[in-house]
Length: 264
Image 1 (tube, helix red, strand yellow):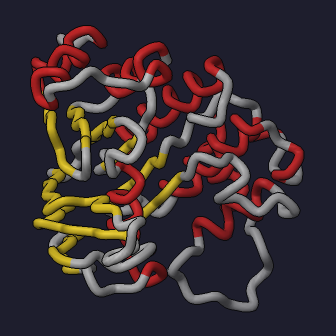
Image 2 (image 1 turned 180 degrees about the vertical axis):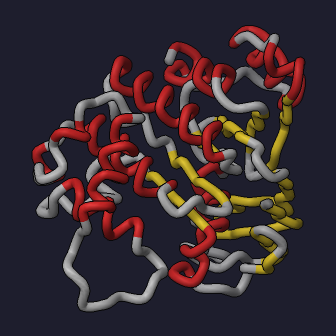
């Protein structure tokens, strides 16, 4: 479902601020895989995500989504393949619009617009059923302005909107990092539920080792723009934070420096 082939990205080339962000980076995701991604600051996690989304062009290599070479496609043309949830809960929803209006926009994404009335009765019933999945009581608040929701409620709604059209690939860019631990756990639980129900191919960046281990069926760790660990199957199921730290030290030759990632 996703192939990244030998991709390199250098920021500020030829200057004192030159940074090799992705170093001949390669990654393949099979259909339905749920991969968590972890690494220290500057490891290349967000650069990888932005390369997939087409935020800026890569210097070398290829990116294919569902067999389609999107390497030279602009960000908005790639959007039809992707669902994405960002770290900031305020991103991804329109605050001044109602919950049902936000969902309607997400549902009609990529479809031709018409002069029909805004939201049909059938659509409202569909939205109610979808919102029940979140377990936040939002199914009874369809006409509430999204700006009045909490950060966790908005992030859960954004997740629902990002998956409404069943994207080829779901990108979760530290989507619980700005939430308190209890709310983050609820959003992660909802993430797992939606991803498994829809069988979505998913790439989730997290700063938390415990979350990286607990969720998904595969874990990769990045360092200096390369994958240094790739763990899946039974090995991942048995993994602990202590195991992961030991594997990192073996692969990199140094200690993992982020207390935030270790302690969660």
